[in-house]
Image (cartoon, rainbow, N blue to C red; front, side):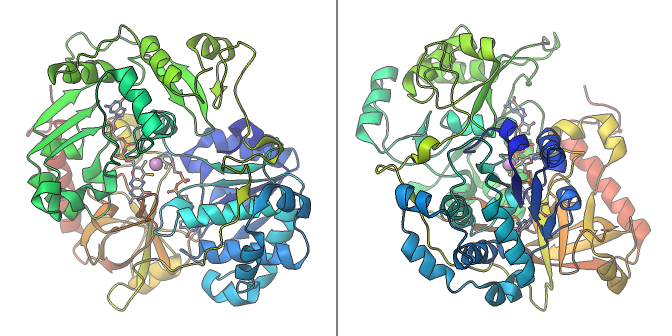
Length: 570
Ligand SMILES: Nc1nc2c(c(=O)[nH]1)N[C@H]1C(S)=C(S)[C@@H](COP(=O)(O)OP(=O)(O)OC[C@H]3O[C@@H](n4cnc5c(=O)[nH]c(N)nc54)[C@H](O)[C@@H]3O)O[C@H]1N2
Ligand SMILES: Nc1nc2c(c(=O)[nH]1)N[C@H]1C(S)=C(S)[C@@H](COP(=O)(O)OP(=O)(O)OC[C@H]3O[C@@H](n4cnc5c(=O)[nH]c(N)nc54)[C@H](O)[C@@H]3O)O[C@H]1N2
Ligand SMILES: [Mo]
């Protein structure tokens, strides 16, 4: 995020784009509500009438997959109505003339068929965003989970640059990132192309720095992204094939797209190692399981989506009979066994090594994290007075070599797999507040299971339910070109008739049996938000209910949650 989460409250206009904070991040959503109370206006861009839409001044209920057409059209209006910040553009950017040319093709009238938004509403959104004086964009998976995703992020950046909404308090662009520590995983270099602190593996000076620190030669080759693993297992020539897979805090057999293909690749691998705090779906393919401690059983540092480092502290000892170690201790022992002795006495020693190797983290010492509670990088000095950086690009200085922001001129492109005669509906997948991701954590909690359990739900417009003659709670069959699954019908007028919505945590109602593994070419994120599907009525409901219960019991036994007889496993 270019801004801090706490700044959300001070924005005068929030442009919430493909982000459902009320379900995904209730604490961040409180900030949106508080901003509204302080007088901020809200524009919500989402194909569903989500909670943010309910409190918004303007809801653009766009057609799924039309993001960049809408964003370019908003830019068109801002330019045509003379609402640009010309001084900011002239002093702090380049590429505007080319961008201006591109937007000529995106008049509100020209895109209304693609976006299903009226020209008046597009104009209204453009005026609100460009004239508030302090506009902030928040976006989420409704942007990222498309084959055209990074380009939409660039399109949103165009809006912020052309209106000068960068480099001040309460403006900017906030990708409100997913898990509590997904930002931390990336900060620490759990990416195929970088060391900790976004230092690229292909840059010789950086390679030399890490070789010196760690005392071993290092590769300058970019690795393989998670979502390309099936391809590298199944389709690459022998010398390039992946043969072993060490899966750590991830459940690809549940959360990756096109699960049939994922299962095929997991079965084909010679070695699968799973390091997790629970058994998960991938565990059923694992040759080795390394059980580790959970978030309240170890110390560490998390990064918030706004670059803020925070300490977490151990509050519980693992049960005496549990054979678990901390994740970092497991990694140290495996490394040592493979011939590279790795030893630390505590997490502070690890942290000190990290920050000393990362210029933008160097000032985030344990001492300061303790004293201030939160340090946002970049924090470039160990001096106690340096408390880090709440918002980036101060005084219009950007991270490009010339210090200027760059306009991107990119055309909208439609999603990869469109509706057709066999699969007439759009399937979009997302989250709900009551369960978390692959459900290892919340699914092991009886209280939450009692509230919501298998096979989950599919959100459908009431008119569609009527056409298909299905009622609330009835089990339906959902299929795509790639597979099928069973789930329950949930009629709701929050969604339009053309698209249905499933959450991805259910093991029986597993929407990733259906999703398309098409990837954004830059981020490698799959198109989870769009594929073609069909929904069918099941005549024999009693049998369907029984099938679901049987399949569920089998999975729970295979995952070691229950015994064959149904009692709790040891
Ligand atoms: N309770 C709970 N909280 C979670 C999680 C969880 O599983 N459960 N998961 C965490 C993770 S990993 C993440 S990444 C975050 C994600 O949090 P969010 O970014 O909120 O993720 P989603 O709910 O997947 O998608 C957001 C919205 O995108 C909309 N959308 C779909 N298609 C389009 C489109 O074409 N254009 C636009 N503009 N919008 C579209 C959907 O209707 C949805 O409301 O949540 C985190 N928080
Ligand atoms: N169809 C569809 N699929 C999606 C999405 C979608 O919107 N639609 N969203 C995608 C997104 S944004 C994400 S981020 C992924 C998330 O998918 P995953 O990352 O696969 O799921 P999580 O539930 O976040 O956690 C993965 C594993 O980490 C384990 N774990 C938790 N804490 C610890 C720990 O401290 N140490 C270790 N070693 N393990 C731990 C959990 O038990 C779990 O098995 O799903 C993606 N899949
Ligand atoms: Mo995520």
